[in-house]
Image (cartoon, rainbow, N blue to C red):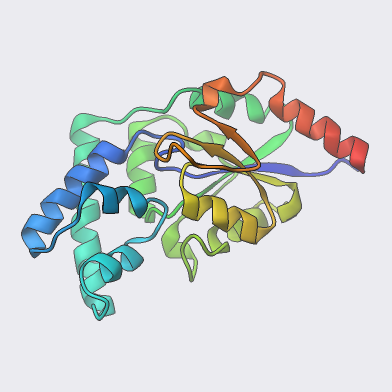
Length: 222
């Protein structure tokens, strides 16, 4: 019986070049809510959920209702930017999204973004059909670096975590993959020193036989 294998994709900074839109949305939010967030802090928070970011950068004692209100305002600003300005896939993403299924890999999305953001991206870009499962931050108890979202994605497509490869651009996501018992491809789109089990500057630099080689190695080891 053939082994079920999967690639679990992060979204922001891995599939899409969303950093400019998110930064603009955060600047609008900090002005409205009267708190400060430096660009360096913004980058260091990549991969984390809004509840963690807001309590870290704004007020550790924010109530759940305040977190929900402020987070929604920020994400609505982001979604409006996606709708009005569009958004781009990062290099190599469309190529690999289209190739992995025919090569026998299931694909899932495991993101720290709320589902509303995922839906906005699916409305803007024709990529939804590539994914066998979609897991967003609001579907799990804990965000990255906890492994919850990756484990939920693997469970949804019934693939053992050891047979999943995570593609990530942020330290929190790489750590989440490690805790989930999954290997990771680090893409250095947002963090130049990021390291995974395999590391590439952009996904268009992966060798054409990269995933086929992983499958062959796995069969040989089995």
